[in-house]
Image 1 (cartoon, rainbow, N blue to C red):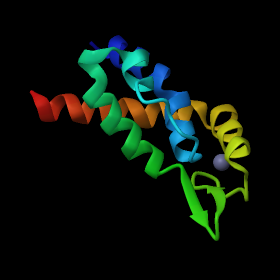
Image 2: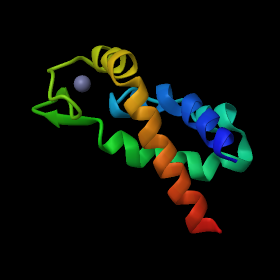
Image 3: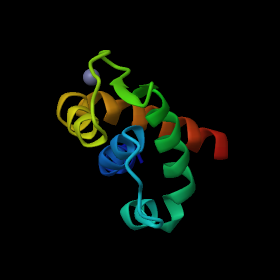
Length: 104
Ligand SMILES: [Zn+2]
């Protein structure tokens, strides 16, 4: 179970960084990434974690984890996935665990 969570979290890092960078996701991107059975949990985890990753001020994007910026959408995406990859993964794991507990 725990390794499943870790694998799911790993798969969701890029999607979460996209969401935090205000880059549009494809409609079924999450389902295609984690499968239909994990879709709901994944969507909730992505939303919650993305909220903690970026700040928008005057249409400029800043990294909430280290306060760097401003970034373009693409710039923030690259910053998050290169610099904060491990942090984002751990945050996703925590949220997925909370979601699973809430369901059981
Ligand atoms: Zn940062």
